Length: 251
Image (cartoon, rainbow, N blue to C red):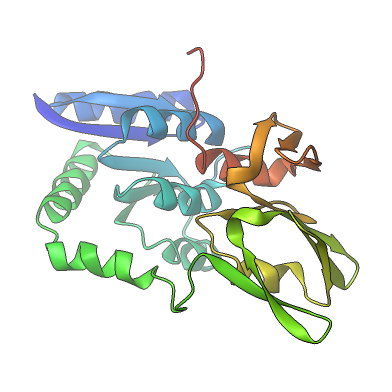
């Protein structure tokens, strides 16, 4: 029996169980199946898999490529795409995620065996320096890492990230709501999203960015902040939002 845990993300249960059966024959008995993005996120939080098989054409708000982007932020596990498509556009999109490989349907035991052994071997033998390099890329280039300077009137005011509640778009302007005052700035949401550090701030709707540390409670439709403000959650943003938070559920 092999100890590695493998997650299969596939909405066609017959294909998912086929992959699971092949893995068990190969000695990989620690396997889980997720048939949706939400279930995938919950399993990753709970079990931290060593390898993920993911169907590109998942049903729902997010396909396998969009979900793959979320998964890459959650866990350092190689991602193998399962697909029946050879569309160059899909392949180009998938390449952005830097997957460990592809399996084309219909597949057989030898296909699964080969990709699992190669991918897990590469994961086990990945140089430590390569892992360190990944974290270095995400380091802030700025000397002041706990605040942003916002121009107000004739001066730049220091605003601690902890004092920012949320950002709301309003036409070609944005309003930054903070503990001491609100700032109206002629910037796009995309520009603000790139300026604010992603470990603290997340876009949860087309018109809203929230500070994750300011959340009091949330459900699938809205977020209540410690300030008392209520922000709407966009349906296509919810899984990305949920992936950023440590949660405890009944099951």
